[in-house]
Length: 273
Image 1 (tube, rainbow, N blue to C red):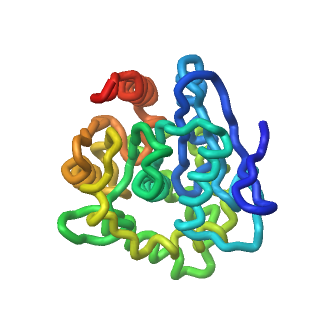
Image 2 (tube, rainbow, N blue to C red):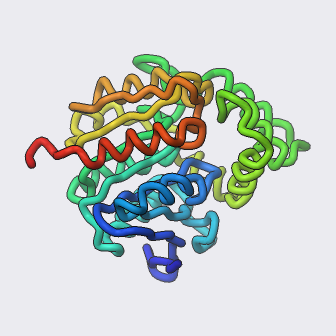
């Protein structure tokens, strides 16, 4: 699969399957384009599915820097333009929702519809309502980073076990999640997340104009369910889909329902059609 240049000398690795309306998937933090494997496999027979690795991760180029949310938004917009697929359907997960949402706000010409999976209206903490990362997750992560003797692989393995799934995913899926996490250099991950600490989308949510669907796992104790509800209530015309048997990873835990719901949303006529 090709790499696409998003800045002079910097290319993103992209997997591009199928034909038809384009869906561009942006992965969660410490996950790669592989997290969308079963969405590309299923939906690629009906749509054009595009998955990519963030700058500095997976098979994408790894320059010295910078790594921040502004650059990630620029990279996504440039990728859409390079592939000539605008307006596309954008699907983001976790911190990938921040990138997706900001791209839709800044470049509405590139976006037909948007799906935010396990997202939040701000990065962390309580504001108008509960949202962002849970207090439980925040306390756990701070303890991990404070302990300089904890290897990051051990922290990621525990993250998967405690916060990502409603039910145990089994060793094979757990291995896949850990393998993807380790394909994010720790410096790169810390740089991206440091740039997101002050993110707060409350002001721009009412100005988003594309059809939007929010996918949230009922049992997500990492990115709180109330954050998804807030997004749905404050983005004009947005709807919330609750995955009753999922935590943070509904695209895995309720794969068939996830794909069917995404397909239905994408194939529905636009209001102006």
